[in-house]
Image (cartoon, rainbow, N blue to C red; front, side, top):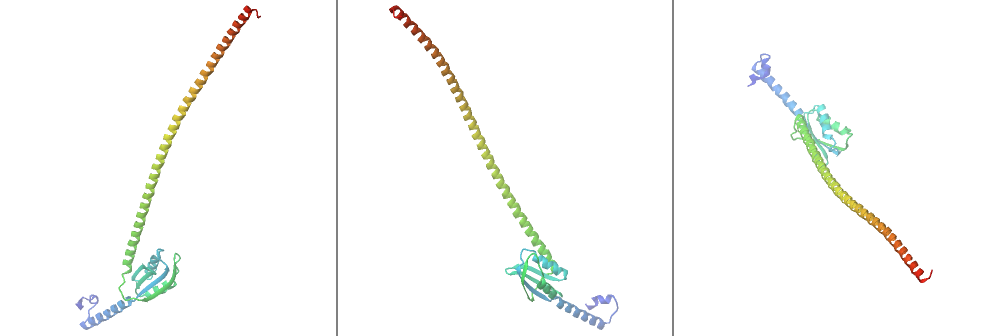
Length: 226
């Protein structure tokens, strides 16, 4: 199988030379793998949740060419797992970091021997989780808007009912006013009739009194009283 080594495509080797070259390459690869296996666990305590702190850490880890990265919220703050040649450099960065949107109170770092996902995979998962949050927030906002619109619709319905009741009350008031007007008209007519009757009665009484006075005068004349 050693004949498939890529070095044989560039120049001719003896078996011993090829085997020696392969062994040297394997040592370098193992050394590189060991170098890449430097891993640290960092716990950041403080006001570092729901303020974009994990994205802040990811962006800086990506800029440092950190190959393995994972960050999550835990009860005491944020837990970060990093792996790669610059893991210690990243730990030092976190210790000295100044995060304006939150407050870092304590940074605890320790060796870590477990597996850590590639930073690219974390980025994908993180973005998907953030998108899921945005969708959830959007759905909650839509639900709230629907509830507000439903409340507004009910309020408008109540206002319509109130306006309808007011309209009916005004109609009743108009009917009452019409009745009052008719009553006033009848009162006026009655007053006019009474006044006319009084005039007729007055004329009748005056005529009657005049007739009585004439009759009395005639009687007195006949009796020689005048």
